Image (cartoon, rainbow, N blue to C red; front, side, top):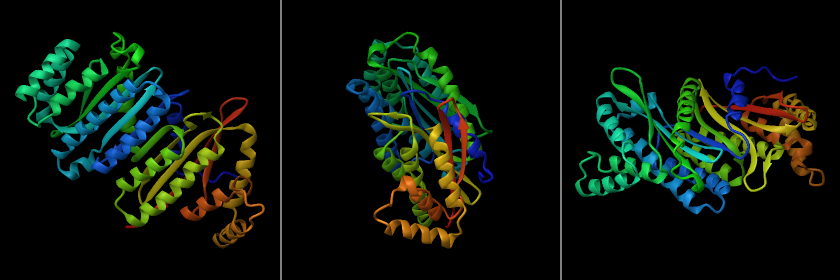
Length: 380
């Protein structure tokens, strides 16, 4: 029997997975942005972009440049505000692929008295065509009059130039002191660069990111990745987690559990892109004194009973029984097969020190959506 599902995080796995389809992907990081985390975010996003842009090197360079500027925009505003405030109102970075378009979105708090000048910059940039932007960029390089932060205005100009589109933005007031500033850049493929209808299609995506940010804040989600899982993604996600957490004992345990969770997606997932990996969703959140880790992916119907049987078997053992079973399997060189023995599930339960929660949701006549969740207790 499936263990009782006590976390709201379990219920949002499939809706999050449904946000994208086919060869699309979405990666979202919420929290404080350090130099090291920024590097890992860029690597993870660029790796996924490279797998779906194929020969379009110009497109990949444009996307990468705009990601860099977007992340620098977050850190510029972040540096202006005390750490306690940025912890209360964490920022967000999101990159999405939707059909033939890429969306790079950022969200961070700004002081309310900074908004008029910021909005004036954005409106000025959005009023110019490509030739005018080029001329304006040269003028700003010469005078530096647009920005008192030594580059923020120039970065916004270049984001508009590189994307060939207007910059979408929104302000969400938080209190008398601060407002969330959301910025989105829509990047069409090389074949549709500068298309007149591109910006109009970005508004719904920006609204979607804002809603997701609110949900991540409400559920205290730290990390969310929806797309293709492979060894490179696993390593990058681990690096981001290690950079995000400042509790050594908990970080080690979370990293170990996370490896098993992501490998579980790769082992059992049925939706595979030959070049990119297995399609799935993974997110990590904090509830009280626990770090919750949730993974979801599509499996074939015939795999449901096998997976369920192994999970029930592993969950049904005591801690000592599980340890003995795990050791026996490791020493049984002739028959040790993780897919047949439940070795991965055993390892995951031992590392998390609790029963594994799971659920199956019927999608169609051939497939199920399979969700697996566990948690790690925070140790300071």
